[in-house]
Length: 64
Image (cartoon, rainbow, N blue to C red; front, side, top):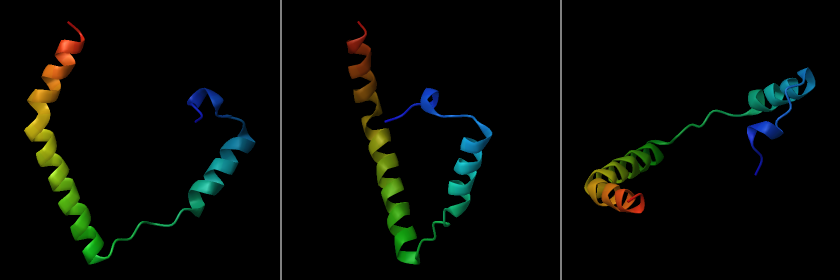
């Protein structure tokens, strides 16, 4: 994995990155894919809400 420090900021490198970025295609969902994604987001949100206190307490204990 490379970090920001490994990125080149030369005009050539920036032009290459812009070329790559411009080549990306838009992500277009079907109705079924969008529904599945929304369901997954909702499920994840509920999980996060349901386990927040437990996870926060675990983190607090790690720093005691």
